[in-house]
Length: 482
Image 1 (cartoon, helix red, strand yellow):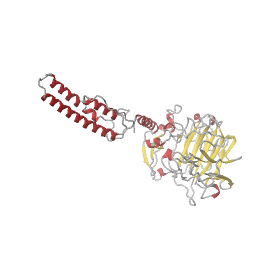
Image 2 (cartoon, rainbow, N blue to C red):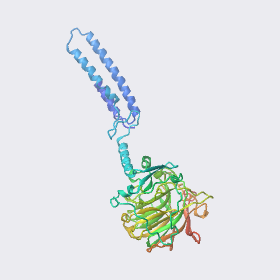
Image 3 (tube, rainbow, N blue to C red):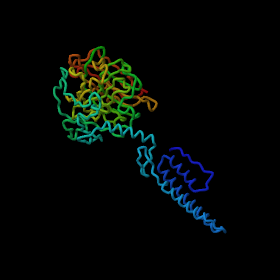
Image 4 (cartoon, rainbow, N blue to C red):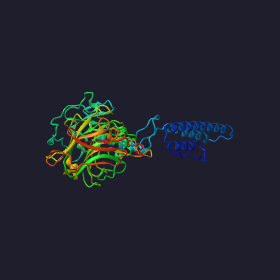
């Protein structure tokens, strides 16, 4: 509620002086209902005052022995002056944009109106015209946008261009051609986007207003990143390789729907392609699945991408929420829910992901599922990653906000520790890297890290079927993780 600046006037010789004070109160109230009540009271008081003044004037006239010619003029002046204020009592509240709000609508203070203007300007920029719209069972709206009109082509380096043709895949890649298969809820109905367009999850006003900071909507909160990726409430269970030059990475990632207990926390499983000094010039490319109530408004695991060139400070974003990633596929919507998902002691489901550098043009390409090329990050976006990566990382990450004063109960992976194994704990399998000659190779010199092992842990192994693999995850808060 806003402050009320009301004060009684010492002088009350004319009706309009009290009325002016009532109007002054009205203009400083923030609730429309209060305005209407105040207006009604003011109107009643004004009417009573007018009646009282009329009676007094009549009495004055009847008791005056000497008739003065100015009395009728004075009475007419009072009537005209008082009635001239009647329209003021029905004034509607004016918005910052010049539009009038109806009386039954909540009055929005100037700050909130300014915030909504920013939100709508952003939505107008990011939501492109659709040639077809598809309603997903989970509530998402998927817009089929012409390829050359997607957000990436707002970038000055890409204006007027079109998506590139598919590159040469790494040698040793078992997926030689795309297999048509549904991996996402929106496509289960059989609907698809026409050739020449790409499916984009529509961003809504609710999506943006859920963000803890509108300016940083679509971005990870900045965190201090070290070689082991720990810091600032972000907790990990990962394996990584470093000390060489890397040109890509590949893995199959087990998909679950972990419980996230705070709106501003998330749980994800992904591949990181990293280069830079782990300071303000850190370059990363990231892809995997995540549960993020803040970003998506629900607890579905969703296919996502991310990139940054300055350690999450100002550049980069999730999915297609800024100019960057160029999508080329009309069957996969980045940011859409993945289906099916794994269940405890039940069916297990994983997705294949590969990120690699095109030897010809230098762009970083993304493959999803059974050989589906999703698109690419143009080489010009990056500084260090323009040449190669210096680290590859696989695993899980959560945010521990300690909003209740103790460690979060947000789950990583399946929400169960690595020791429970297949069908219970989440896993990565068939881990590989891409070398300078575009060859897929098994990992060597692998490092294993769980920065809070009592909350989330990891166990690595190798066999002939899964190659290099690991189980990871955990429940978060428990007797050993207070």
